[in-house]
Image (cartoon, rainbow, N blue to C red; front, side):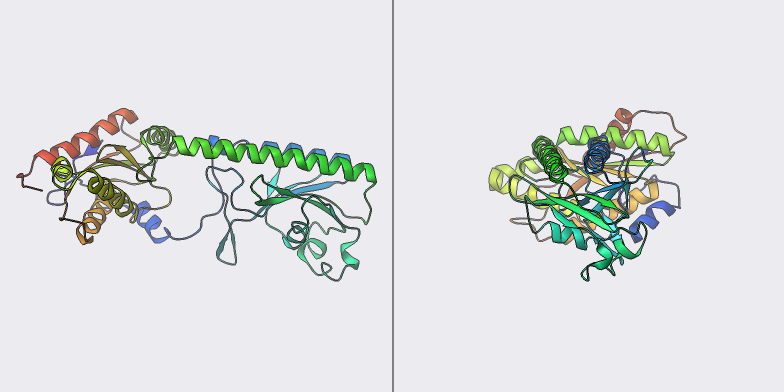
Length: 362
């Protein structure tokens, strides 16, 4: 494990950071939707069950849930890439013989039409004879849908979450009993998603620092455990940075605690600016911040540290310029330690950096 990076004299010895460099080049791109977060593991099993039940009560071979709103209660929202651009819409399909669901964005035109009539079923008996949809991807491609029925799902605050749909390769019509059961089932899914969104929002509040809006100590501990597990599973390096403000007590004493709070809010924005989407920033406590950098070796940590230092130096701070102390620690797959040791090493590196310089007045 390597620690104690300073811009003046680095003890990092490796000269390559291919993975970090690759990530830097793609930092602004929308990644394909995938997450292995336990917090999101509820979604696909729930959708699989509801889609299966919908297909069963309607007597159709296929079913689908179409997400039309970015927020359906996911900790890490799913993103698709369509024509090179990020798209928060998604579709989860269930075909005959499947035990789960398959996520694939095929065609949203029918679902977007169905979403305009909340509380009602949109039913198209034969897509091939409907001029609005006969040339669409659902009718002309695979799975060559002929019959479509969809019910909009609307949250308690009026957000259109998406549609629960059933489909067939043959023209048909639902019976009154099937329509009634289909709508009741959709309301149950609507309630479950809405409930999960509320729970997710409450959990997010408990994991967010009220002052800066970034992660708090609790969310930092949780994320560190996740990234440590991923580091061990994927045999990738993991880096942690610890940052605090030099002479912050003097700053508070001189300019007042509201000014100190405003400084911390601004610093949180500055620290977040050079990070990738996969990196994590939290307020560790007081004027101390923690950054978790997955898949980042010592050289990559040095690059991030330099960018943070430069970003802080460029900012026009209120009252007076500030300086920060920054410590870094990196662990590679071949080294034996635990995440507590990684945290301790980063904290010690920051402490040595802070107290190894000539003091000055704030």
